[in-house]
Image (tube, rainbow, N blue to C red; front, side, top):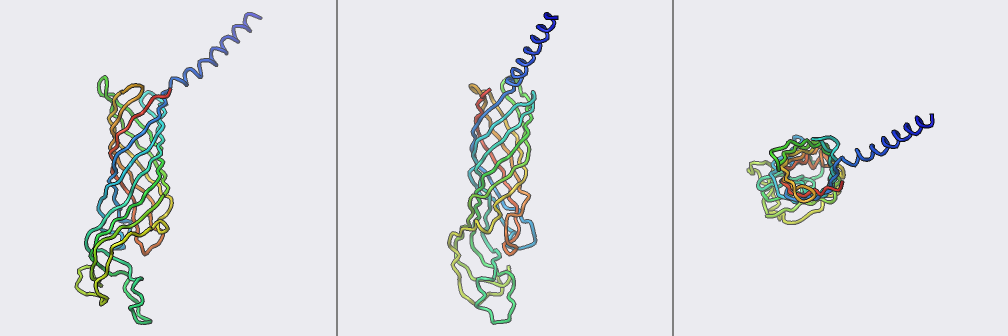
Length: 255
Protein backbone atom coordinates (compact mmCIF):
# COMPACT_ATOMS: atom_id res chain seq x y z
CA UNK A 1 0.00 0.00 0.00
CA UNK A 2 2.85 2.36 0.81
CA UNK A 3 4.38 1.58 -2.60
CA UNK A 4 1.10 2.37 -4.36
CA UNK A 5 0.74 5.65 -2.50
CA UNK A 6 4.29 6.60 -3.47
CA UNK A 7 3.65 5.71 -7.11
CA UNK A 8 0.41 7.72 -7.18
CA UNK A 9 2.17 10.71 -5.64
CA UNK A 10 4.93 10.48 -8.24
CA UNK A 11 2.37 10.42 -11.08
CA UNK A 12 0.58 13.47 -9.68
CA UNK A 13 3.83 15.37 -9.30
CA UNK A 14 4.89 14.53 -12.85
CA UNK A 15 1.47 15.58 -14.17
CA UNK A 16 1.67 18.85 -12.26
CA UNK A 17 5.10 19.52 -13.70
CA UNK A 18 3.88 18.70 -17.22
CA UNK A 19 1.12 21.32 -17.14
CA UNK A 20 3.35 24.40 -16.84
CA UNK A 21 5.86 22.80 -19.23
CA UNK A 22 3.15 22.39 -21.88
CA UNK A 23 1.94 25.91 -21.20
CA UNK A 24 5.47 27.26 -21.57
CA UNK A 25 5.71 25.75 -25.04
CA UNK A 26 3.05 28.13 -26.29
CA UNK A 27 4.89 31.00 -28.07
CA UNK A 28 4.46 34.52 -26.74
CA UNK A 29 5.70 37.61 -28.61
CA UNK A 30 6.05 41.32 -27.95
CA UNK A 31 6.48 43.62 -30.93
CA UNK A 32 6.46 47.05 -32.49
CA UNK A 33 5.09 48.22 -35.82
CA UNK A 34 4.89 51.43 -37.80
CA UNK A 35 3.79 52.65 -41.17
CA UNK A 36 1.26 54.76 -42.99
CA UNK A 37 -2.51 54.92 -42.99
CA UNK A 38 -4.69 56.15 -45.87
CA UNK A 39 -7.89 57.19 -44.10
CA UNK A 40 -11.13 58.48 -45.57
CA UNK A 41 -14.49 59.53 -44.14
CA UNK A 42 -17.48 57.64 -45.52
CA UNK A 43 -20.78 59.52 -45.70
CA UNK A 44 -23.29 57.93 -43.36
CA UNK A 45 -26.33 60.08 -44.18
CA UNK A 46 -27.94 62.41 -46.72
CA UNK A 47 -26.41 65.64 -45.39
CA UNK A 48 -24.24 67.42 -48.00
CA UNK A 49 -21.75 68.23 -45.22
CA UNK A 50 -20.91 64.51 -45.01
CA UNK A 51 -20.23 64.03 -48.70
CA UNK A 52 -17.24 64.63 -50.96
CA UNK A 53 -14.33 63.48 -48.79
CA UNK A 54 -11.22 61.93 -50.33
CA UNK A 55 -8.29 60.18 -48.68
CA UNK A 56 -5.41 61.72 -46.75
CA UNK A 57 -2.17 60.25 -45.34
CA UNK A 58 -1.44 59.75 -41.66
CA UNK A 59 0.86 57.82 -39.30
CA UNK A 60 -0.02 54.40 -37.95
CA UNK A 61 2.26 52.90 -35.27
CA UNK A 62 2.03 50.93 -32.06
CA UNK A 63 2.99 47.96 -29.90
CA UNK A 64 1.43 44.52 -29.62
CA UNK A 65 1.44 41.19 -27.78
CA UNK A 66 0.80 37.90 -29.53
CA UNK A 67 -0.01 34.53 -27.97
CA UNK A 68 0.08 31.32 -30.02
CA UNK A 69 -2.70 29.15 -28.68
CA UNK A 70 -2.66 26.55 -31.46
CA UNK A 71 -0.21 25.43 -34.14
CA UNK A 72 -1.43 27.90 -36.74
CA UNK A 73 -3.67 30.15 -34.66
CA UNK A 74 -2.75 33.02 -32.38
CA UNK A 75 -4.38 35.94 -30.60
CA UNK A 76 -2.95 39.42 -30.98
CA UNK A 77 -3.72 42.54 -28.96
CA UNK A 78 -2.43 45.90 -30.19
CA UNK A 79 -2.25 49.44 -28.86
CA UNK A 80 -1.83 51.88 -31.74
CA UNK A 81 -1.82 55.57 -32.56
CA UNK A 82 -3.79 56.09 -35.77
CA UNK A 83 -4.97 59.08 -37.77
CA UNK A 84 -8.41 59.12 -39.41
CA UNK A 85 -10.02 61.81 -41.53
CA UNK A 86 -10.41 63.09 -45.06
CA UNK A 87 -10.19 66.17 -47.27
CA UNK A 88 -12.30 68.19 -49.69
CA UNK A 89 -11.17 70.62 -52.36
CA UNK A 90 -13.89 72.42 -54.26
CA UNK A 91 -17.54 73.25 -53.76
CA UNK A 92 -18.79 72.15 -50.35
CA UNK A 93 -21.68 72.80 -48.02
CA UNK A 94 -21.35 75.05 -44.97
CA UNK A 95 -23.92 75.70 -42.19
CA UNK A 96 -25.87 78.97 -42.45
CA UNK A 97 -25.88 79.59 -38.67
CA UNK A 98 -22.80 81.92 -38.72
CA UNK A 99 -24.70 84.24 -41.09
CA UNK A 100 -27.93 84.43 -39.10
CA UNK A 101 -27.46 88.17 -38.47
CA UNK A 102 -27.85 88.86 -42.20
CA UNK A 103 -31.41 87.51 -42.31
CA UNK A 104 -34.50 89.55 -41.35
CA UNK A 105 -36.34 88.55 -38.21
CA UNK A 106 -38.87 85.79 -38.83
CA UNK A 107 -37.15 84.57 -42.01
CA UNK A 108 -36.14 80.90 -42.06
CA UNK A 109 -32.82 80.58 -43.89
CA UNK A 110 -31.78 77.47 -45.83
CA UNK A 111 -29.93 74.84 -43.84
CA UNK A 112 -26.73 75.13 -45.88
CA UNK A 113 -24.81 77.54 -48.08
CA UNK A 114 -22.09 76.55 -50.55
CA UNK A 115 -18.56 77.84 -51.15
CA UNK A 116 -15.36 76.76 -52.91
CA UNK A 117 -12.33 76.15 -50.68
CA UNK A 118 -9.98 73.47 -49.30
CA UNK A 119 -10.67 71.65 -46.02
CA UNK A 120 -9.09 68.73 -44.21
CA UNK A 121 -10.27 66.87 -41.11
CA UNK A 122 -7.69 65.04 -38.96
CA UNK A 123 -8.78 62.83 -36.05
CA UNK A 124 -6.11 61.17 -33.89
CA UNK A 125 -7.14 58.02 -32.03
CA UNK A 126 -5.65 55.56 -29.56
CA UNK A 127 -6.87 52.25 -30.95
CA UNK A 128 -7.02 48.80 -29.33
CA UNK A 129 -7.71 45.87 -31.72
CA UNK A 130 -8.05 42.24 -30.63
CA UNK A 131 -7.26 40.04 -33.61
CA UNK A 132 -7.43 36.34 -34.43
CA UNK A 133 -4.49 35.36 -36.65
CA UNK A 134 -4.08 32.32 -38.89
CA UNK A 135 -0.69 31.35 -40.35
CA UNK A 136 0.08 29.41 -43.56
CA UNK A 137 3.69 28.35 -44.31
CA UNK A 138 5.15 29.41 -47.66
CA UNK A 139 8.24 27.24 -47.92
CA UNK A 140 10.94 26.94 -45.28
CA UNK A 141 11.43 30.61 -44.35
CA UNK A 142 8.26 32.52 -45.23
CA UNK A 143 4.80 32.58 -43.72
CA UNK A 144 1.56 34.13 -44.95
CA UNK A 145 -0.85 35.20 -42.21
CA UNK A 146 -4.32 36.70 -42.14
CA UNK A 147 -5.81 38.55 -39.17
CA UNK A 148 -9.28 39.83 -38.33
CA UNK A 149 -11.08 41.15 -35.29
CA UNK A 150 -12.86 44.03 -33.54
CA UNK A 151 -11.35 47.21 -32.16
CA UNK A 152 -12.26 50.03 -29.82
CA UNK A 153 -10.78 53.51 -30.14
CA UNK A 154 -10.51 56.65 -28.02
CA UNK A 155 -10.32 60.09 -29.65
CA UNK A 156 -7.25 62.04 -28.53
CA UNK A 157 -7.91 65.20 -30.57
CA UNK A 158 -9.52 66.40 -33.78
CA UNK A 159 -9.19 69.51 -35.95
CA UNK A 160 -10.12 70.94 -39.32
CA UNK A 161 -7.69 72.89 -41.49
CA UNK A 162 -9.18 75.19 -44.14
CA UNK A 163 -7.65 77.38 -46.87
CA UNK A 164 -8.70 79.84 -49.58
CA UNK A 165 -11.44 82.46 -49.86
CA UNK A 166 -14.72 82.27 -51.74
CA UNK A 167 -18.05 83.87 -52.46
CA UNK A 168 -21.01 82.19 -50.76
CA UNK A 169 -23.94 80.77 -52.72
CA UNK A 170 -27.41 79.43 -52.04
CA UNK A 171 -26.89 76.54 -54.48
CA UNK A 172 -24.08 74.03 -55.17
CA UNK A 173 -23.98 75.18 -58.81
CA UNK A 174 -22.90 78.62 -57.52
CA UNK A 175 -25.48 80.47 -59.58
CA UNK A 176 -27.24 82.32 -56.73
CA UNK A 177 -24.77 84.37 -54.67
CA UNK A 178 -25.48 85.38 -51.08
CA UNK A 179 -24.71 89.14 -50.87
CA UNK A 180 -22.02 89.24 -48.17
CA UNK A 181 -18.93 89.47 -50.37
CA UNK A 182 -15.95 87.15 -50.48
CA UNK A 183 -15.22 85.25 -47.27
CA UNK A 184 -11.85 84.04 -45.98
CA UNK A 185 -11.93 80.35 -45.00
CA UNK A 186 -8.28 80.01 -43.95
CA UNK A 187 -7.71 78.72 -40.43
CA UNK A 188 -7.49 75.80 -38.03
CA UNK A 189 -10.33 74.81 -35.71
CA UNK A 190 -10.30 72.36 -32.81
CA UNK A 191 -13.37 70.15 -33.27
CA UNK A 192 -12.64 67.60 -30.53
CA UNK A 193 -15.82 68.50 -28.64
CA UNK A 194 -17.90 67.94 -31.80
CA UNK A 195 -16.78 64.31 -32.20
CA UNK A 196 -17.77 61.27 -30.13
CA UNK A 197 -14.87 60.26 -27.88
CA UNK A 198 -15.31 56.52 -28.47
CA UNK A 199 -15.47 54.55 -31.69
CA UNK A 200 -15.45 50.86 -32.52
CA UNK A 201 -15.30 48.71 -35.61
CA UNK A 202 -13.44 45.93 -37.37
CA UNK A 203 -9.86 45.55 -38.54
CA UNK A 204 -8.19 42.99 -40.77
CA UNK A 205 -5.09 42.39 -42.82
CA UNK A 206 -2.73 40.07 -44.68
CA UNK A 207 0.95 39.80 -43.74
CA UNK A 208 4.18 38.24 -44.98
CA UNK A 209 6.50 37.05 -42.18
CA UNK A 210 10.16 35.99 -42.11
CA UNK A 211 12.18 34.63 -39.16
CA UNK A 212 14.77 37.05 -37.79
CA UNK A 213 16.84 36.46 -34.64
CA UNK A 214 14.57 35.41 -31.78
CA UNK A 215 11.43 36.55 -33.57
CA UNK A 216 10.17 37.52 -36.99
CA UNK A 217 9.91 40.52 -39.32
CA UNK A 218 6.63 41.21 -41.07
CA UNK A 219 4.92 43.46 -43.59
CA UNK A 220 1.16 43.85 -43.12
CA UNK A 221 -1.39 45.40 -45.49
CA UNK A 222 -4.85 45.86 -44.08
CA UNK A 223 -7.75 48.12 -43.32
CA UNK A 224 -10.34 49.12 -40.74
CA UNK A 225 -13.87 50.47 -40.64
CA UNK A 226 -15.65 52.25 -37.78
CA UNK A 227 -19.31 51.41 -37.24
CA UNK A 228 -20.23 54.51 -35.20
CA UNK A 229 -21.15 57.88 -36.75
CA UNK A 230 -18.44 60.14 -35.39
CA UNK A 231 -20.31 63.47 -35.17
CA UNK A 232 -22.09 64.51 -31.97
CA UNK A 233 -24.44 66.97 -33.69
CA UNK A 234 -26.77 66.38 -36.64
CA UNK A 235 -25.91 69.68 -38.37
CA UNK A 236 -22.32 68.44 -38.82
CA UNK A 237 -23.50 65.48 -40.90
CA UNK A 238 -22.84 61.78 -40.38
CA UNK A 239 -19.56 60.09 -41.22
CA UNK A 240 -17.82 56.82 -40.45
CA UNK A 241 -14.07 56.38 -40.22
CA UNK A 242 -12.17 53.96 -42.43
CA UNK A 243 -8.57 53.44 -43.40
CA UNK A 244 -6.22 51.32 -45.50
CA UNK A 245 -2.85 50.68 -43.84
CA UNK A 246 0.63 49.39 -44.65
CA UNK A 247 2.96 48.71 -41.70
CA UNK A 248 6.27 46.97 -41.11
CA UNK A 249 7.30 45.56 -37.75
CA UNK A 250 9.22 43.11 -35.63
CA UNK A 251 7.97 40.57 -33.09
CA UNK A 252 10.40 39.27 -30.42
CA UNK A 253 9.68 35.87 -28.92
CA UNK A 254 9.63 36.15 -25.12
CA UNK A 255 8.68 32.52 -24.43
